[in-house]
Amino acid sequence: MQSIQKYYIHSDYDKYLHQVFLFATFEGSTWVICCGEQPLKPELKQPIVSVFEGTEVYFFDIALMLDTIVALYQEGAYTIKPDRSGNYTPMLDVDSNLEKHIWEKLNPGIFN
Image (tube, rainbow, N blue to C red; front, side):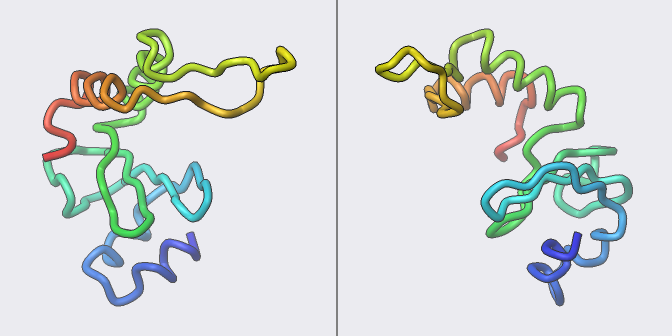
């Protein structure tokens, strides 16, 4: 939470930072669930928001986030392949076009 507050101090978004649940961080990016009013997409009750070099709504809610992630793997947008020795590493192979298609199909208008 301190990283979000530090980044957005004196911004328009600091007014709702006390109403989020931080649940994931990676390389400086933070994902939060908004638990109160928020100005990004006010029609959404509990969107998943990415806070990094700006803020963006990534998913309409936690259920659609999980559905989207599962679909990304099931439909082949995300794959994990073995390395030359046959071991699986945590490196993800991403089909960006398919990823965006699936993301928008399950979260219509998310990038508008």
